[in-house]
Figure 1: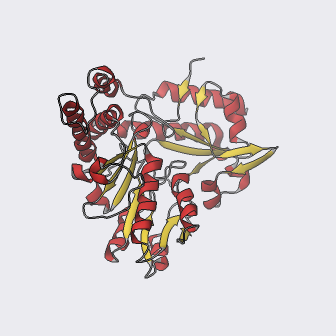
Figure 2 (figure 1 turned 120 degrees about the vertical axis):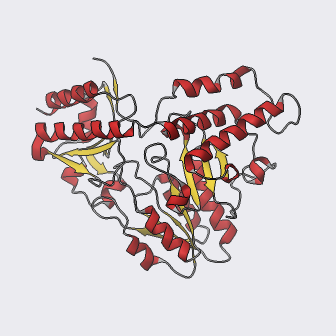
Figure 3 (figure 1 turned 120 degrees about the horizontal axis):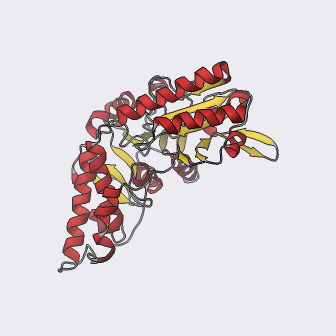
Length: 372
């Protein structure tokens, strides 16, 4: 049986046009972008063009974009950079219990260095209540970091409302937009953020490249020290090849208008599952405020990892793990207070630009075989 890929939230293929844009930088343009001679200047121009392309997707200034090695580095840079630069003014950071590990683990690290972290709860749909944020803010709060959309269940957070709370109190606001960029609008001024993280391999660019949006005038400590690359904000010779790939992918994402079709296909997928399994399948995440490509469902009384082990031709992710015969829910599902008998059967199907109705119908048919 042919293989079906429904794990686009984990990683996306590199678009052919992105790969084509990168090709010359595998052979022809090999100079150091910091070198002011004939070999370095084309590389420098390519990096700056890519910076403008990323800025175009986010609606910001090119000089507000810092290239990084990916979303994890961007998140680390934002949190650690803000804390170490401004801890003389306060040590309190607010985040949520459903953040990506590249937020939660830096928070644990900063706690060992004197930070006070508040991990806000979420509702049954995985959403943070802005009122909880308001009540949690203290005089010593220096940073709020809430993801734009959850990688596991797709729930979109009320970032605009939370960012306004932060802005009105002169508190830095950061959002992890690794999952949302290219899927829903991520214009920085519309969201009201001071910092935003991107990951290339989530939007059809290569792995190993990302970006951090840093609003003009926002001061943070560099995460990587060395020479004066990226205007002194991120040391290390620029990865021209990958920067070009990210820029091309961002430009294409800014023009692409097919996400509505992906959403229709996702909703059709859910309708088919409900028709076949009735009350035996449950939706995880917000019913409407959710990424248009993400469908996280639980097969009640089943174990997600066991189902996927039978669907060897289908690439998808599970929200539970089996250790020594015991099923353990993911931290996200735990924070959403999903009952164990429901959460243990969770599977995340994340659709992409190439997903077809025939693939969805095939997966539903295979699920019928496995579950019945």
